[in-house]
Image 1 (cartoon, rainbow, N blue to C red):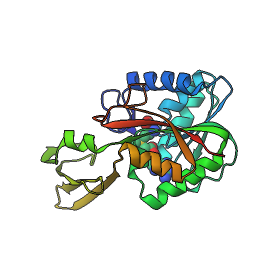
Image 2: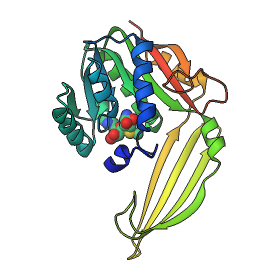
Image 3: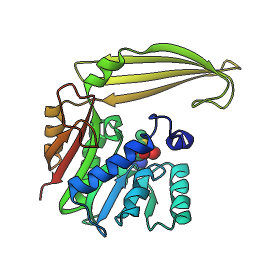
Length: 248
Ligand SMILES: C[S@@+](CC[C@H](N)C(=O)[O-])C[C@H]1O[C@@H](n2cnc3c(N)ncnc32)[C@H](O)[C@@H]1O
């Protein structure tokens, strides 16, 4: 997974470097972030965004529950002399209070959480932000699934994302349009016949759903976009970039 985050040629675990550069520049401007402001990066991974914000003088705290990603992010900050605080922690257990001017949750992480955990996360972000704090996140829309279609394919690889040795992968996607839920399923079969099933569930959102859900979590949506680089929102957008402010 860490290697996939760091691979500049894929958009699988993190976006490509040029998109991240654009996103960081746009978020800085759109949020009016200044050098010295405090930013919370939830699910920061190996710190691809955190390190860019830190180079612009933002005081970043990154939180992730991937040990390897946090170790890499800390090492990278040390090498480049960047003053970033990284916590190896589950953000559903975050207890920070009144510390940050802004918080970001980037690359659809909100969509993989079940409703109960999304509520918990919103409460944690609300508590962690200062009274006029801003929360930036991106979520997928059902349009992405229409574009992808129902997945049904297979491949054999000598080594790859799922295993370092020869394996067969059966990929299936199942859409549940009424609930706007999508299941991405991978059946991995190894040379000795061992079979493992991985299921990634996604909650997609339309405009009304995300506005209401954030409202229920005491956030007011300030603006909606097609991404986090400033592309205007359209009904056909496959992603939504959201900027919300914390209600008192
Ligand atoms: C899709 S990756 C995105 C990483 C980063 N935001 C980026 O775009 O480069 C999701 C990240 O969130 C982390 N993550 C997922 N659930 C988490 C949780 N409950 N607490 C902390 N980190 C979490 C994963 O370990 C992973 O690094």
